[in-house]
Image (cartoon, rainbow, N blue to C red; front, side):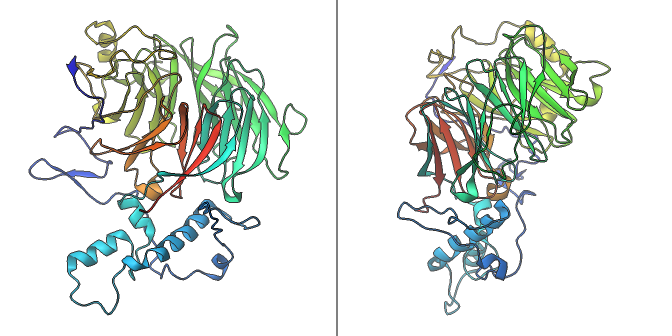
Length: 500
């Protein structure tokens, strides 16, 4: 073990495949940016002018700096609101732009203005957001305050709803971000043990799943035309129970994911199994047992549903091919490099890159082209030279704090340090493709802060502080420069850029 500080670390060794990360290799081995497919091409029209339909969208600015829509403002999608916000922020920065009367403006300066998306060029603020440092780093509003720990906090894929799940109140709240985060539905959870462990939204947005430390998953409608309706049982709407196991009611489901086609649910359990549940037949179609301890995290590689991952307390991340399960029932490979159990997995949704948050206090980035074979993983399970500790992350501090603990056969392509994974299964994510080009990784923390890392350099670019207890989950809006965090202190907080 090498003595060192706990600062963030990121490395991508020369020669490592880096396709899809927005990088290319210079002739001297240095890594440089190249255009990313995730950058959004903008309309060539003048961004300072709004269409007649867009004129109705007004941004209400209060003394507290609220940039959310006025009550009564009607927006069809999060993309429309993002367009209005872009134009408003662009106008606020006109002082930075070059004037037509300016002379002797260098080519470099013009290119700089264009990349920033400012001035009279047709490039909008989305280009600036995707290329530079517009990060939601200032706590702007306390959106809700509960006498309960907050465990889940996630925007839906379209950004039109925010889902919050709370422990003591045994409740899931559905908020409307386009109406000042008004609560449009409350779901009273059933058959809970300890807390709600995970939620998942159906691809069509009609249903939400939630799990607990039981072998049951509950399916509830997301229908919110009548705000204030509470879903308690099969009275006001659908509230169905899906049984994943009859072995023991003490078996818990730590993580659930809905497939992109809406036909299957994959779940990680404490037994430790990975379950695949068929929605139409309402039964388990695969029960995979190749982890040695609890399966804390599952994730699909992309929307094709062919490849998915599972992360366990045995420190391994297994890679599964749905098409081969009927023949072998074995993983097609594994990611080896963590020294403690996994807490969370998040895919870049490009069939190639994955990040994992673990109890060894690191986030690691993985490339499918650099995974170990299943035979290598089986041999790795027999080895005893991996540095691990006997500790319980729920109430102890990490024994390796202040030391650089490294797996001798680490196959990850980057490692990020500086946050704490204690007390609960803390989650980490890629930043949105639309507004950042997935340039950042962000995570909650056991200290109550939120950490944002640069994917390429590994540097911690922001540490957001407001909460006074653990931040288990947080979510960056898919189209707006807004982040929302949920904490064990019971608060739901929105974060917006400071622009200082």
